[in-house]
Image (cartoon, rainbow, N blue to C red; front, side, top):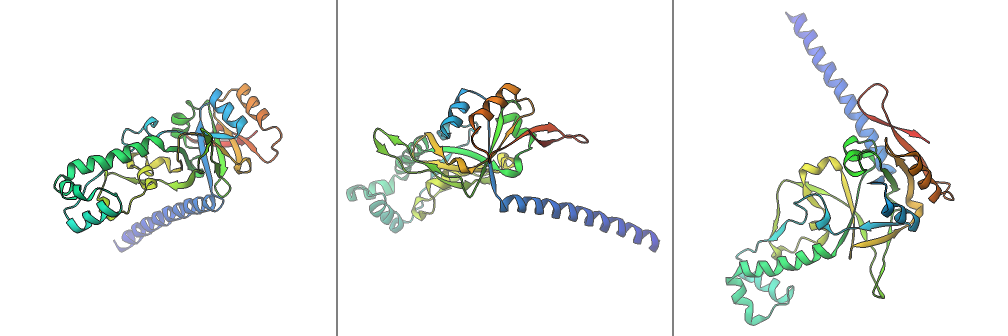
Length: 280
């Protein structure tokens, strides 16, 4: 009986040891990827992509064009503390003093005014989405964001990736900021503005945790549109399993003078359900 228990415990401990080793290996790979941190962007192969690569630009979209219906779902909820409300209303919102008591007693109406302001900011900011470099061979990412494996994946060096502002009606626009790592949650952002802890980055980098597998990072711009990236940051281009030979040839031709850019393609793993990378 003691012998059986000993063997049983050995099997359990051995199983835990093996799983522990697998976890350590995963963490080592993840940490190694983080040290040389790459950010990747999946894309369909189309005319917009070709124009962007030719001009060294990426498009920053309005958040309302994204596929997550919960993007931008944020609402202010004001507390009942009069002194805090007064300070916020007069010194930060810059409201009229003769309306102070009215809005304090009609908080829902004032919340609507604040939320309209942030709705406007949601509509007017641009966002460019990336994923962590460890997602390069993620089958779902290729299926969802690279035209069912017919597109490609741009791999950037995080420490070198930066975007330059554009001119809008002869007015300079400030450079996009980032990368901002996404925070995943299952709750809406209902915050009291009196605390003044939230920023536009917080609103634009909080997502429903059903998307946590995407391991997303974002750059945020003051306006939607095309922004120039520095070519030194483009580390490699990975073509999908079904990317056509003509598409590969066209992309390579665009960067024919950029010797440091590597090219790889997704292929099926030999011994399991999964992808691996092949240099081309």
